[in-house]
Image (cartoon, rainbow, N blue to C red; front, side, top):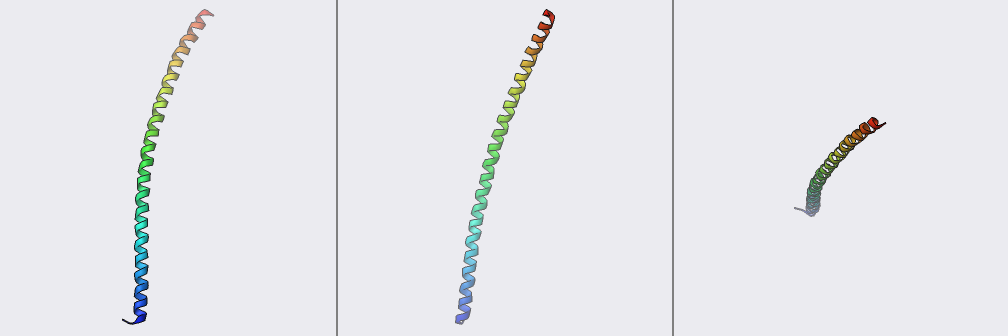
Length: 80
């Protein structure tokens, strides 16, 4: 192996080393992204549950107001 071959070999080794470093960083970022998406999905599920509960409460309140309002309206119509 002559000096020129040795220089090219070292350049190739450096390129492969840098490639492996970049792939390692990419893998780490991919894992971080995956875990972040999992957390976001869990948070979204919690928020969807809260919205569902609040919607049920709103419909219940509207139903009660409708019954009370309907009964009050019927009573008032009988008086007047």
